[in-house]
Amino acid sequence: MLKDFRDFAMKGNVVDLAIGVIIGAAFGKIVESLVGDIIMPIIGALTGGLDFSNYYWPLSKAVSATSLADAKKQGAVLAWGNFLTITVNFLIIAFVLFLVVRAVTVLKKRIAAEPAAAPAAPPRQEILLEEIRDLLAKAK
Image (cartoon, rainbow, N blue to C red; front, side, top):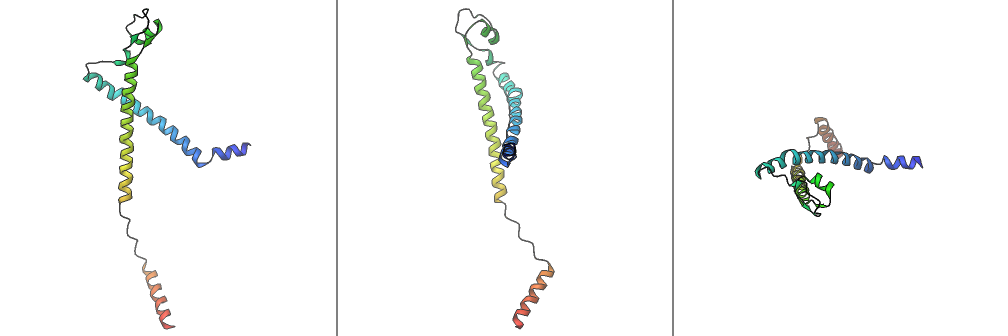
């Protein structure tokens, strides 16, 4: 049974999938940083420093806090600003990934469209051997 598991785990597909997941997680962190550290601050600056993540509607009269974290401790809240922020982050991440996939697709098309290199001329020895072969065939 252990041998079967080892054979399964070492198959190319499983290893490729594991590598893909690890690279995907690392790439996800890069894109998350791009959105959180570069794009969202620019959007915040353009909108006058608005941070939608703390916008909410209290669902209880006991909620009187000014931040979402404190409001959640006081009672039920509808955190629409946090949902909006996460939705905007998703759209930006999806767009960045679209651009990456599009760039890879264009690159693959360019590589496929390149004409194949002309085959190299055969060495002089092969040409001479072919001529000798042809002469011997005529002599018969």
